[in-house]
Length: 91
Image (cartoon, rainbow, N blue to C red):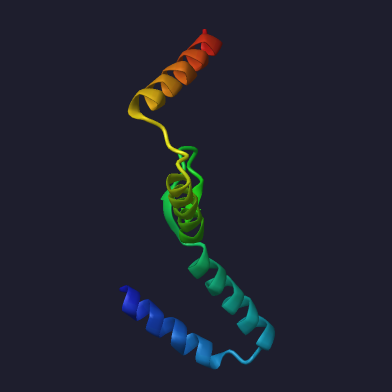
């Protein structure tokens, strides 16, 4: 069944529903799903919503505007240090 056919089928079924509690539950579920659609995933597999991604982008823009940035050399040193600390803990 195609997405269009599913939507039509859902519309037809919803037209027959009279119970307000059922309609509210369906509405809440669809609304939550629509708001929480993942646009990506964190390294641990946790979904990232569009709202969360936009928040991170806004924070990054603010950091850049306020000069809170690193040179390439600083970034390399930071990760080199972090990775060496991580590998020494595993050993």
